Length: 139
Image (cartoon, rainbow, N blue to C red; front, top):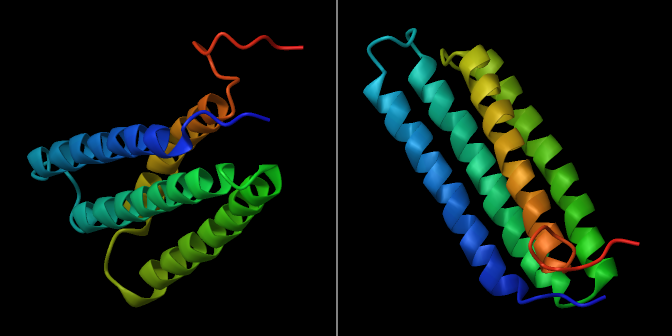
């Protein structure tokens, strides 16, 4: 299996993740007057965790892609498990130990994670040479 410059591609997708996070943060700050109390910290906690998860996955996938399919799959599986643990622990902490809105934290975490997972899948397809626009044929 041929990998097409996974490091350069990961930097491009990391830039897209950061741009999306910047836009969502700006909209949240701009609309903070209409948000419920304690919603903005929840938005930033959920968005921040999703950004960290996406960036760490992209970095790990770029590292694993150069080392072969087994390393790449190990990074993917460990990334999924790591996110589950960290996201769950954060939501439990927010629910029990803070006054931050759990609904906004969970909503921001789920929504931004879905957007970033789409970017991660696109990255994986392009890095493996099978994504749209690569000219690769499907069997």
